[in-house]
Length: 253
Image (tube, rainbow, N blue to C red; front, side, top):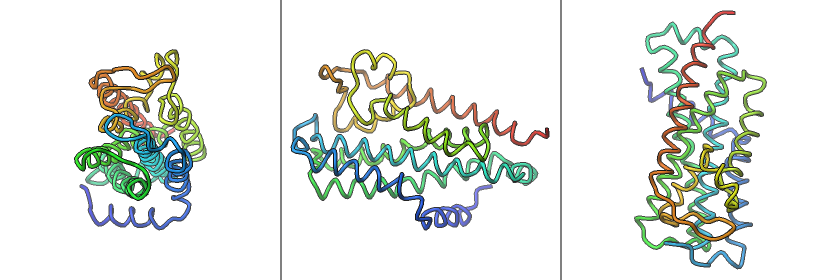
């Protein structure tokens, strides 16, 4: 069973941890200000907004997926101490426990996204309509969901000592490969389309850039369904790996 009071308690505990904010808020916010708002090209038009808005959306979803991954990875400590076996004996079982963790990380991911969007609205970021602003914000918040599963998957498979460091390093690499930070070349795009971050990155920018993807050689049209399939496929892959990792965490050696 899902306990709202437990969700609120864990979320509050996480949000009052000062170490939580460096990689999930201060770093993405600083990157937006330095590479977006502070640059002369920030007000150049980009689809239904400008370059600053494009960077704002990119850094916002990066904060969301980093937040989701780091928060979910913390369950490795609990699982390594045998908590997984204890929870498996309760009424809700380990599935309920993991789903609660999914909800908690999804809730707290909203905080850094809201801060970066507020900074964008107060600086040079422009999106044509309020509806597009709202759509971009909602997509950034939802973009963390697959990576909550990624964090849980890392926790159940890699263990307490390795989970946070390895999953964080891999996530940064995936962000670069997925074109989240910089436009990619046409050659790299052939690989990027099959990486986990690519679909999320372009979905959150869809209200701004529409059905176009920016590369180093220009602007290319790309069907929306390709990005949706990417997100759905990787979400399912992470979910399946979480399932097998869950069984692995409760098995006795």
